[in-house]
Amino acid sequence: MKTIPIVLALFLLQVPQASIKGRVVRLGTDSPVARARLALTRIQGQLTDTRTVTTGENGEFSIPNLARGQYRLFAEREGYVRTEYGQRGASRTGTVITVADPQEIRYLVVSMIPTGVIAGRVRDANGHPIRNVVVRALKAVYREGQRSLNSQQMAETNDLGEYRIFGLPPGLYFVSALPRPGPRLEGDVYVVPTIPTRANGNRRETRTPGTDAVAAGIVDPGVFDRETFLTVYYPGTTDITTAVPMNLQPGATVSGIDLGIARSSTVNIRGRVINGVTGQPAENVVVSVIQQGEGRNGRSGQAALGWFDIPGVTAGSYEVTAQTISATERLFARMPIEVSDRDIENLSLILQPGFTLTGRFTVEGLSAGNNNFKIGRPFVQLEPGTAFGGGYSVRVGSDGAFTVSNLNPGDYRLRIVAMPQTWYIKSAVFGTTNVLETRLHVEAEPRTSFNIVVSANGGVLDALVLDAERQPAQGVTVALVPGLPRRDRYDLYKTSATDASGRVRLQGIAPGEYKAFAWVDIDADSWQDSSIIRLYEHRGEPVQFDEGERRSITLNVIGRSQ
Image: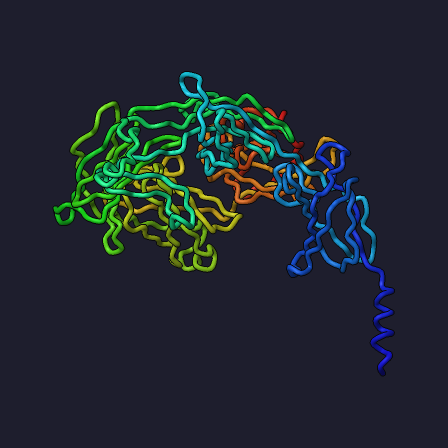
């Protein structure tokens, strides 16, 4: 009996085990990537199932003694983009490795993309270098056609005004420069921005009474200037809409991206906030001055005994908003203003309660009694067209009714969340306004309901995507874009990525004309930008849908340079 475990152990040692062998190379070449760290993770496995190895000088690796299962293989190394085996283009996932029987899986090739560098200098109006300027590499992101720039990497200029932003994946980047904020005055308080540390209690600023700061001799004379620095975008504009992106290629160093700095005079916005319910000066109120347009800036402060004073506002179009911060009382006010070169005095904001908007959500062809089971109770979302407020999200009731409470005046974009993929919005009417063609405008207590009708009979598109060798292309972004008259209807856009067979299915397509595109490498959601779509318009495949129609098409991959 004692010999059984030994025999069994010897038997198990003879059971063949699977292994994976391969190489890590630089994208588009056969050049090995040495000292790359690889992690093999088992799908639906445990953390302890992860296996790690490092490539040799020849870029080769071997992972032995693998059990049956499905795996994903990742590679990372300084100077390269973290990559998954089989990943291509903008895809976020690669190819699943299946180990079905004891075998040796050989010749796996993991292609890694080298990162790039953007470098340059920042100078003042006289051509002198400026240190401690924050330079950012920004990428455009889109949400229902609205573009914003998100910081990806940043660097500070040295004493020569030089900066170098490294570790950037290839793609389109905007570059901006803005000196770090200096001390400022807020009323009679001297405020100095700081870097949070344990020593200063992780504070982002120190606040000293003005008289104490003067007595200590620590007041920076610059706080008395009525000027502020503006963000400058390459090639030297403060208008974000005229900023020019650069196309950073894999492993490239783009130098000479030089920027200047810009200053602008500022004014103060002063006024009072009145509680429209009581007629008394409002308390516990936040007042914000929000610039309109893309790249908008904002400043805010609290009203003390109903009075507010917002400094440092540059010329432009703004909305001044005031909102209570009480948990028991929600009041709101807004006022558009134009700021020039003079202080704006004696603004009067009257806080009022929000409105109540009622509506009904109907699934075409279904009675209200069936809706609870059929529609899964989606959410109706109203997103503000300006920066004030936070938007609203309410769940549709089992009878199809919904109510939005405390709705602030303004313009809102409609979104429906958690709706079945096979459905589409057929109509959304508020009074006589088609909200799908414009925005929901609310300026007084609504006297009519908001009626939304969806159809469960959306169209279906099955697409096969082929690469340049006429082979199925995995991980390719496919986007279905409405025809020119309806390009502003972002509820009509559809997108997904192809699977391992190069296929993709798009559902819930409203009747009408579209164009289908397939990109091997495109910045995330940038196909929502009409200016970018125009570059590829001739490469789109026209397709038209009637109610509930199913279509099948074949698409060719579009490269970034095409």
